[in-house]
Length: 119
Image (cartoon, rainbow, N blue to C red; front, side, top):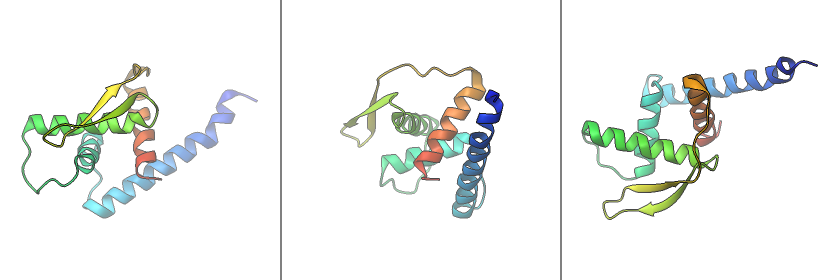
């Protein structure tokens, strides 16, 4: 049996689970966000009780960084250390993220998002 035959069910399952995440987000927010939007939503969720407000560009980047750390902590790349005095979560990198190209990075993040939302 070739490798592609073994991976086909996994790939189909991955695509189906990603579509379920997109459907969930569309139902919840009225549209399917791009990956930056997904990271922003995860970051806001992880930060906790944020009042509805406009975020500066730097704060949005910080929220997306929190999201990436949280998501990749599921795979042992980061470990939660605690929160600072302002309530921001902090993570320690345990190992480098080794993916091949942008497609590999996106695939890893999508897997982490699927796990995060329990799909």
